[in-house]
Figure (cartoon, rainbow, N blue to C red):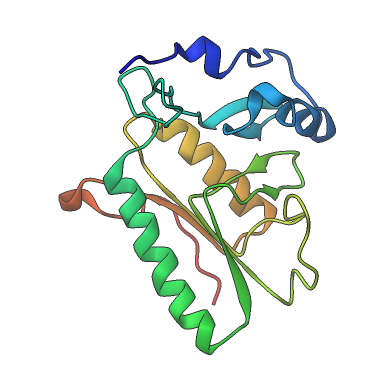
Length: 185
């Protein structure tokens, strides 16, 4: 199989100067950004996930070129989403988002937690784009390429914006734990 180089998958470089949320959305909507996920942290674009290189048949492939896509963190997030959805089927009081669900924090951060939850009371109308308020709670599951410092920064920004709980989990089973949290119930 022949892989296209990463340059043919994403040809628009990540801006190295701060941008507004509106500029961020315009940049994300460029044709070369399709299939990629980004967050806006302190005005700067941060890669959340990139499209994997594709083989000659057009199928997306994982490779050493692209560190995104780890099975264990994905499974942890899936289990959390599954538990929340089971509860919400019986008690339709809110919405769950997955890794491409954006939340706009008052600080200008565009945050895409691996799992997010927001009550219907705080989000009476479902938005087309990002949720305009912080999630009630957010979970990040550490992938091999994640930095603890960046995850802590996002968690602290969520908490400062009014999230009731925010944390991240290590994907190593012997170390599964919440690193930062605040409960308000």
